[in-house]
Every structure is written in structure tokens, then in C-alpha cells.
Image (cartoon, rainbow, N blue to C red; front, side, top):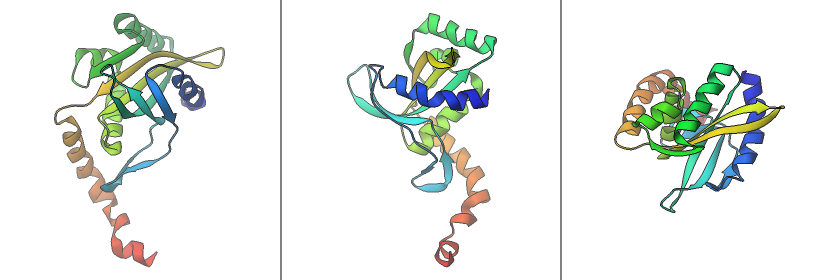
Length: 173
């Protein structure tokens, strides 16, 4: 499943460019938080998206390819209930309906590391070995959610990795 998901990311990113929501889509690799290099993330892309208000914002993009019948049906059920393109807040019932619990921490981590208020969660599947988008969920993180996540992330990453970024070690090479 993981290999199929990775294989599907590029075709799905290409399809996102034709969605009216997206102005630009950029594939990216490993990104570190600007003010704390011990915290990183690897989103599938960064997109410039247009909100319903007309404002343009950057958002990280996470693509999940569903291969099991049950997870495909769960994603299709969320689409039937909420639509193909969904805008929601991170603490809403819509968010809980459209983003499986196993993916929620990954999304908030992307928002925190990239210092972005928006994450685009794309659910896809393979049809005839071609990526097919089931649903696009634009999640807005508000309130103290990102700050709370940052405190928890730093409590783990700094004791484990701060030695690696010590200025004396960097100077010595």
C-alpha cells in the first residue's frame, strides 16, 4: 500500500493543478521548522490555494492513497456527505468526518512545521493504475492548536536532537 501511495503522489499532484482551488502546486522534500531545525516534516507538496473568500494562501499538501475497500468506501462516504472539495476548521465535525483519526496528527504537524494555517488533505485511489482524487479537504488550524502542538513536539525533539544542531559541533564539522 505504501509503495502504491508513493507512486500515486506525482500523478495526484499533477491533477491538483487542474482543480480550481489551486493556483500553484510545488512538490517538496524534507522541511525543517525555521526557528527549530530539530522539528521536520515531509509534505507531498505546497500549494497556493484560493479560499472561498478569494484570499490566496499557502498550504501544505498531504496525499493519502486508499487501497483497501473499507478505507475507499469511508472516503467516498465522506465525499457523498460533504462534497468533493471541503473547507473546514480543525475542531469541526466535518474535519472529524473527512480526516481519519490516524492522519490528524500528521496534518497538524505539517501546519506547525511549515508555519501555515492551512493543510490540504487529499484522499485518492488508483483506478486502472491512474491516481483518482476522491476528496480534497482544506483544513484551517485556528486557536491555540498549532502552538499546543509545537510545545508537545519541542518537548520530544529538543532533548533528542538539539545536540546535533549545537553551534560548536557545526563549527567543527
